[in-house]
Image (cartoon, rainbow, N blue to C red; front, side):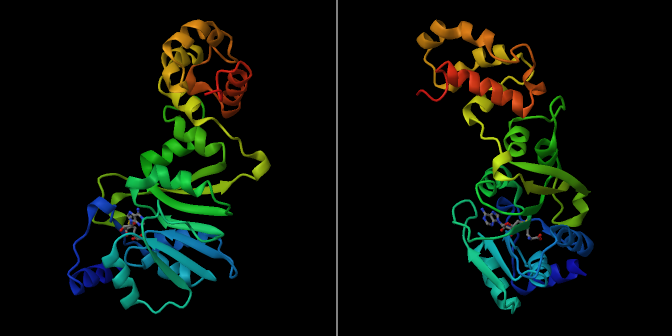
Length: 276
Ligand code: SAM
């Protein structure tokens, strides 16, 4: 049913799909309903959606939320949404979700444009919210949820899980979208941890470590000392300190978030981090 509605809108507005904007529209009604159910939206809650597209998910959200803010970059889609729907509780924000300041919201529900997955996720995590239900490319979702020792465990896993509990709850085949993307997708639920349990990590340290994820932690840092803003001279002077870091013998892809924090604290104490 959504597929025929999509085709009729495409032909009515002579719309060409812009793949540069990750325009793969969800055309399976049940998946949209499940995404909204998982968000457990209460009647007094405000929902943020990134990329409403032709409004299919937005329409379902508008039935449950007090208010929906939907940020869309494509001006043609904004015009179509304004002509086709007469929502009272939806505000369309025309703009780039990476650049606009979000209004206050309780929850996020989105089928994300995949090309901005990483920066938009880190942007979400700078806001206060209760829960997010998000569709990502499967491979990205697997990296978000990977645990120490997994083959997908990466800088993304560490930085996201330091701030939130992350769960992959459903895989979605490419046939659920039009046009069909080249990759499968997955639904992720993101529950931010209470502020006091969130772990602040030095991003340049995590980057430096995961530049060499299969090496021992001490070797990885020696090999990417430049990413810690150390000059060659300074590094030569202090390189032995790296042998003394906590968990020095562990491979980077086996380090837990807490172990990375231990390394960070050690390097701070030694004046290697946070002194530039
Ligand atoms: N919500 C619709 C659905 O589920 O069918 C469309 C999802 S589609 C995967 C991604 C949407 O994000 C498109 O409408 C696209 O125009 C929009 N978009 C892409 N980049 C964006 C950005 N930087 N800021 C806001 N919207 C963006």
